[in-house]
Length: 442
Image (tube, rainbow, N blue to C red; front, top):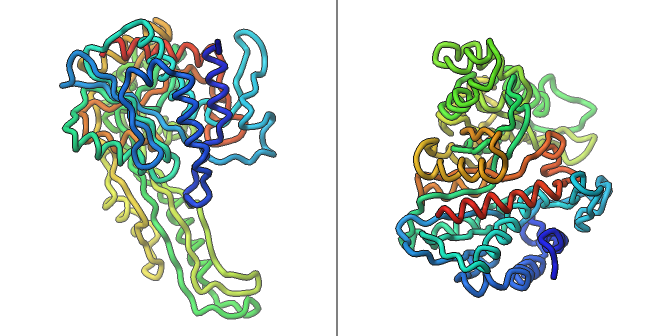
């Protein structure tokens, strides 16, 4: 009989890669993944109702003794593309490197997000085999295109809305158990996202008459665009301490040395100092105290000796809780300060609602963390920096959280969406225990 690690490896070897251009997707890989789940977790598939949504997403329902406050446990099956030449080990071989506590599983999706999906299935399979029946319904919701459009998650949400489902708790991927992320904090912290930033793309466009590159004008479209990008860089969004960040600092204050203990614990008074210190603490800390904006895609002339008639830049903006799409557009226009540079919103979503860090749902998560990941781990609210499918689920519940139950090092977190993605085998196995505890308390 296969072990949990061997089942994990088998599912990691299925290349469920998503692309923004869906014509590039090998849909058969998702069919193979579904078939493998059914074969590897037969008890769960026999007991839970399950259906395919939006072509390739999966929705399971485990009927409990009641259904008025169900739990929804989320994940996504798709992974981002790879550049195989950058990897030390083949990205879809699920190679185990090292032994014992040092054993690592190298594979695309090991953390993001098959690590969670497979751990959830392991937890459910074990509980079903033991004859457990949840007190409340439990739904498992696995999207197929979280990394791109998120259409699968939206279709699942629409299905649940039509069925009148109102959840007591929703949990998705998000923060992890980490060390040393917050200045002065040495205890391990379980960073549970209670909100996530909004996401928008703004297009900056400069236009010109064009012509031959041998006779450029004083301010060609490319130069005007470059100036606009640099003006936006030199005028960042204002610093601010959002409520989830205040709560995080207050939670961690007792574990910080002085003077940080006072700074964190009296954030209402020390906020001006705190935000400047956090902004100087690196990209992650800067991103929790301000809306961020960065130029990503650039386009110009079709040839090296041709003046661009249109020069365009995509600006990726992540909205801090409390900011809005409208306020961000106003800031960009003011920073660019050039009426000849067009500012257009390509797509946008507002910051998510903020879930409470008190109450039954929060206590369930914190209790599961302490019981399975270590009593020394401090569970704290956290502002999720990246976007996830959970933002679509806020219409189903006031208690939507983002947490992946794996203790990850800085170098492991740096592999997300990059090469050499990996997770320590014993860390992954402990994550199964978290999902068991959370579901058992449903």
